[in-house]
Image (cartoon, rainbow, N blue to C red):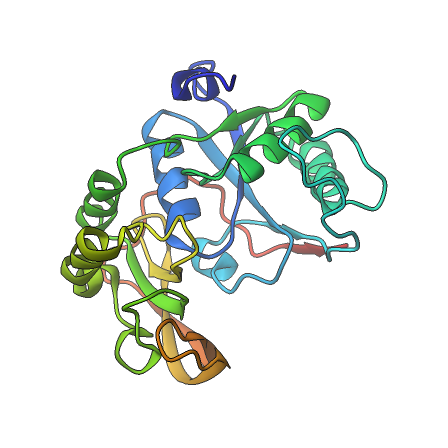
Length: 258
């Protein structure tokens, strides 16, 4: 049985932390929770390109995924050629370069994600910090909006979500409709069932905000009931904020690719 959420967030008073980021709302909000708990954010890490690294002005460690999902069982064991080993190599490098002790991860419901991150952290003697784990999703969505996370919908894949209507909408614009879909069809309001994905344009940790200059809708599956489509960014730029982010993080625009 998996340990309760508190077991994953019980830490020393303050740690140097690297954040696993996807660019979405969950990873950003979990970073905010790490800062609120007194930890120092020193680096970002991801296994795919992320446009919000410069907005946070933190060093970004990035690794190309060489493996694939080989071991898909409920318990992960080290497996050659699995993409989890790419994550291991990435976080091993971050630990060596930045002397981090903890890893911020925005897992909410995915045991698949949690088990694999915890496996890697255990092997590297790192503390996973998953403050969002098993939180009530309606409460969590409201907290994110109230915390001034400016995230937009960049992918839809569920009954009731329309690419033409909903792609590019902000979380606060979508909240009432997501609650309605949850009542009608059981949609996860935070998108934990894969119903939608987000991209964060601004949050209190960002030193600059991201502006989308141009984008296009790409339809992956034109299903009549639950079309799958995503927003492809064609041009972005950074813009200074009137009130810059508090200095909880070391400033750097270093990017390491491997």
